[in-house]
Length: 322
Ligand SMILES: *[C@@H]1O[C@H](CO)[C@@H](O)[C@H](O)[C@H]1NC(C)=O
Ligand SMILES: *[C@@H]1O[C@H](CO)[C@@H](O)[C@H](O)[C@H]1NC(C)=O
Image (cartoon, rainbow, N blue to C red; front, side):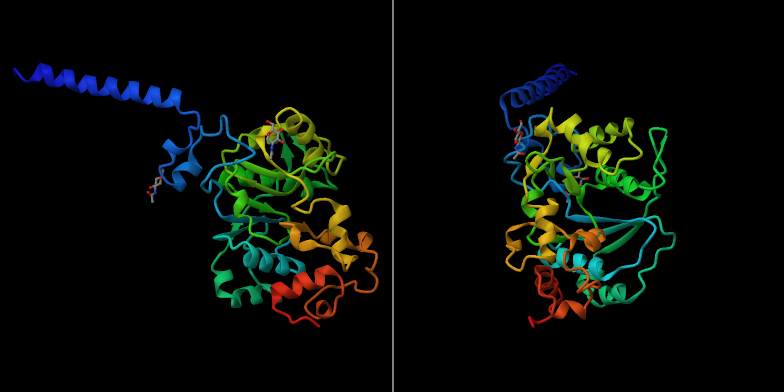
């Protein structure tokens, strides 16, 4: 009985001491990241870390999971460009996983190019298919009939990143360099000088502060504009006021169509200096001045294709230079 009082006292003293110590730690430590870094997963999952995040230097450790996300609404077939894009991401970045998010029920990896993927064991073991409903409305506003699948994809990429974190890529984004250097930031977006941001590539921790804000910009939804909600509104409403919410990439994700269309036109193009290039696959018929000469790009036509895309594709497919 005699020992009880002092023991209790020392226990309270310990608690008070711990609280004081924590408080001091908290006040003194201007870089609050390290003490919380229990392990990579713990860090990635924390909800409160990004106040005062340095968007220019990032942190020392990876805080974005090494997952590449693609969205395949209403079409799960893998075409030649899709295949080249997948091989490039594997060869040049090497993610742990590829998540294919699709609304195609019972999506099967069938057809020539999926069969080729299956033969590459290292690649195939990384593929996961996840069912994802195509959104039909946002904040009670019905999505456009004409742009619905695109606007739905714009919205879904934000929701996917909010759920998992990772690297979102459009289906025609060819990865040229490892993206690991960007996995040390809260959120990375290509925002060229005097342009709206490019949403073809978004690299983010799932708790990135910009993601809920970005989704909230859809409270004003312009049904008849291709890129108002995709790029214009988040730039004007968020980035003009809070550029610190992203690590800004200028040019290196190849978002500028004036640059990226050169993969079909300019044999001298210095594409290797970029991290990613947007292949504009769906727009080639009118953006590629030589479209009529090679309307179909596949494993046969690519063998002698004289523009940079030929070299890029041959390299990731191990096809010898002609
Ligand atoms: C990492 O931290 C998370 C959350 O704090 C925990 O659930 C997980 O078990 C830890 N993993 C390892 C390998 O210690
Ligand atoms: C970081 O945020 C500041 C605003 O606080 C912005 O001016 C700057 O461009 C950003 N730097 C990068 C590399 O994104």
